[in-house]
Length: 330
Image 1: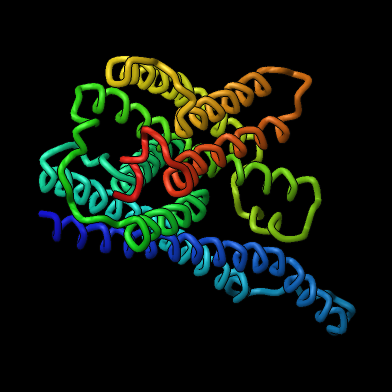
Image 2: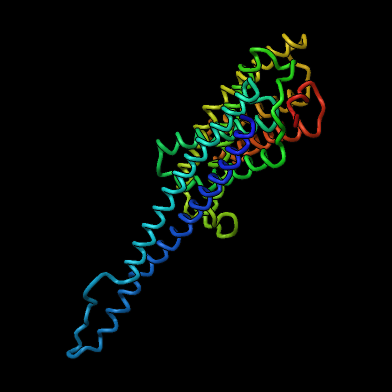
């Protein structure tokens, strides 16, 4: 089962890569279609002007089939739609492979697959992509955001497989508690939603800059993204949904710490950074609800919140020692 899980993770990475490339093709062909559509009227005017020299001064309008550039634009649009459908299909396949990899890993370990960084990252990324597919089913117009989501999936899942991987091992005795399921499951779920939430947050900042007339990198990448208002709204909805779950996870961790170590809070590095993340995300929601705070300023706070989550996951586990050290690379 362990070997099967490892193979499925590899196939999932490849499927995410196919989805990312397909989204990129859709994006590129969309730009070609836009340029072709803009060129079509120019071509038509050129043909009309060319008839000015006809006998009697009559202007001969172009007749016959649709100008070739318009036909080419139609074909390009069809290819873009096909690439988009392939991207979504590949994402669904990748998510299924990802899920089965987690299940087989849990069966091989005879426990929930959350015992170390490798398993934690795999689970968080799966929650993120599963939430994305739910959002996509409700809002198909946001599909082009999939390019950035699949890019994040490729980077994080590949990092887990190539850098964080550890063989299946029994659960550390300190984690052998029903609070393990309660606390870690809610942390995993909220972290996965925060992971998805940072994608439209960054996309909104790029799109907002593009709509304001900025033509430098990376704002030009936002040319084909949904409108800034839709991206900002999605960012808020995801964070507003995840924050109460994250709050419960922190409280559950404190209760577990009281039962395991005789104190609910001890400013352990992971506890400290969890508190920092909670404060930053609370600050984002407060800023978002304050009319005098600009939406781009509030969104930067959300991005900062996710950076603190990354610090808690990677930085604390790798560079700090504390009571949570057993949740690191091994």
